[in-house]
Each structure stands twice: as structure tokens, then as C-alpha cells.
Image (cartoon, rainbow, N blue to C red):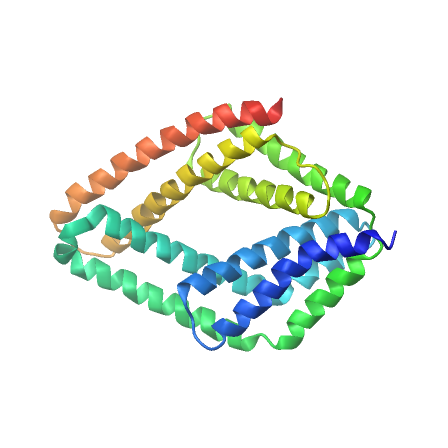
Length: 277
């Protein structure tokens, strides 16, 4: 039993060490690239804890609590990702005419500054001991587990995600469904990589993984468009009178949104059939 611990912990150590190092850099200065790296590391840690939670029947509540000190930070780091996507969507759709919409550009910049400030404050509020406690907890939860138990837990989680995909593949996808599928796909990809890292075979074939990557790319484009649409809509809703110059660009963003949504529906149906059989 003890021989499986190094395999399990090596997979965790890579992300934990990277996350702790980036956290230290961000405690000195907030940068979007580093913030997104930390979000990725914390996402893996959350998924890893989810596996341990599923595998440890007697320690479920304690496993859930281990991520507690980082829960709010992870939530706010996702907002860093979102405001970055909004900025990219703004650059894409407003293009060379951004000068005509300088007021909206300033609103995006103000939101970005507010988000970054809040993230920095949260980082400074998390003591180094919380990182040490997290590692100690993971080590304790993992040391009594076999690879077979880990494999079973991962397979259960992946199957649950696939069941959800099966339901949505038969219906029209609304924004919330696409968002949930995107999170599920990201979780499945993370688990598949972890399986390889601890010496297990992946559940899905290389061809399916190639199609997952293509779907993720489409979903990133969709999210940029969706977030810009929401942000611009909220911005304009606060105005007593909306300038006509926004009508054309809003119409174009909505048209792009419909096209991207249709692409995702098509790719989901193609992919999920392969994942389910």
C-alpha cells in the first residue's frame, strides 16, 4: 500500500509547488499571467481533493474543508480570467473604432483594477501556514489509498460528468449549460492527465482527446463573446440613454454569439456520442 503514495503525491507535488511559488510572486505584484497560472494550479488541487474526497469515505467533511482557505481566492482569480476575456473581446469587436467607445474601455479598466486590488488583498490575507496545512492534509488522506481506489474514484467522477453531457447533447444548449459543460470538460481533462501521471491509462482515446481540445477552443471563443455581451449589457443598462453607436456593435456581438453557440452544439453532439460509446 505504501508504495503507491509516491506516485499519487508526485502528481500533486508538481501543481502544489508551482501554485505555492506563483502565490509568492503574486504577493509582491499582481500580474494577469501569473494570476491565471495560480488559478490553474488551484483548479487541479480542487479536483485532486475531489478525488480524495470520493476515495476517503470516513474523511469526506475534512477533505472538503482542506481547500477552505483558498476557496475565495480561487473564486476571485476566475474573475481575473473573466475580465481578461472581456478585454480581449472588446479589442476584437471594437477594433480600430475603440476610440469612439473610450468611455466603455475605461469602464473595463476600472473593473480590472477593482478585481486585481481585491485579489491582492486576499493573497496578503492568506498565511504561509495555510499552504503547509493543505499539503499535510493531502498527504494524510492519500497515504492509505491504493491506485485501484484512486482509479475507482476518478472513474466515478468522470462517469458523472459524462452522464450530464449525455443529457445536454439531446437538447438546445443555453449559456448556463455551455458553462457547465465547459467546467465538466476541464475537469475530465484534468483527471485524464492525472491518470497518466500516476501510471493509469486514460479512459478516452487520443482521437477523443483531440476533439476535446477543439471543443475547448470553441468554448473559449464563446466565453469571450458571452462575457463581453453580459458586461456590455450591464454597462448600457445603467445609462439613461444609450447612444446609437452601440446598437451596431451590440447586434454584431449577438450575431457572433448565435454562430458560436451553434458550433458548440454541433461539436458537443459529435464528441459526446464518441465519449458515450
